[in-house]
Length: 178
Image 1 (cartoon, rainbow, N blue to C red):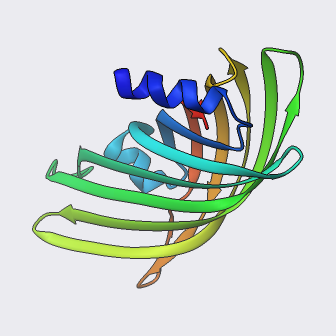
Image 2 (cartoon, rainbow, N blue to C red; image 1 turned 135 degrees about the vertical axis):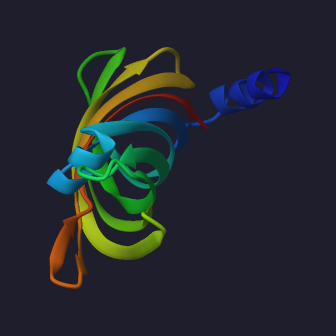
């Protein structure tokens, strides 16, 4: 805790161009097969970092990892999916008031998954994109919370089946500017 306070006091003394956010996010699957096996979605941790590059424009990178268990529809066999995504992009953060900001963002998305069911393992990856927005509540010049809503677009081909790896993502996080 002391290190965090020292970091925050150092950051308060300079112009804050960078940020780091730790979030809890909900991912709602867009693929009906995943919804049937793993429920409509799952909660997972995420980290996002960014840097303001020009006025209110910034670049960012994000990593999230989801692991879920489910049951096959007919045989009720146990299944497991590990799913991670890495995205990079740019955004704009506008000001609503002293304490409230809004943001819009667009980025490239890389998705990797591994699913195990009935003794078989299937894995793959895909590149797509994401589009999102959010609201930032400024607690101070250094600390803030972010509420975001994004949509991730990515597909993978598995034999003759198209897997929709994207979906809706909603998150709430705590951030630090430096």
